[in-house]
Image (tube, one colour):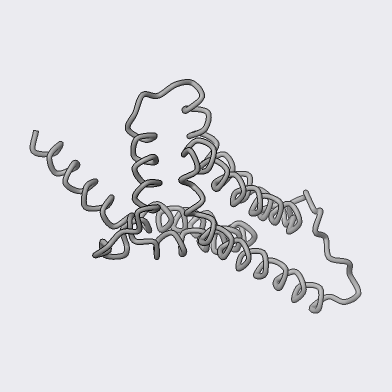
Length: 180
């Protein structure tokens, strides 16, 4: 019984820190090292990035004051996670690791264009889920999602430009689907 109490205490501690929107702003940025390590075909890098992503919700201290819109969305998210699970909810939950796997696959196969498509799909899907399933409360995620999306898109486009500059005689293979 002591372990269950410790787990509940830990989850409560982590959930309080999840209310700090700084974690909302940094979480989309984990796409960059995930893309980089996938492109470099580093399983260790991908694994460490996924661990960092999973733990980033509690890196920052609990805020002194919480925006009521943040509170509303997180109440929805908590209810979604702890409420009854239907087949549809299982499919939605499984979509998260699936889309991250597709992101890794796109960059693993050196397809910058498909990587950009997946990055944009992740941002749009996350906000749409929060808005639709969260009865509008997901709009609070729009700022962090758009900023993260802009940074990620800009970084991938910058990398593509640098790659093109390094090999001016060869066309950049943004549609590549073959490995080395």
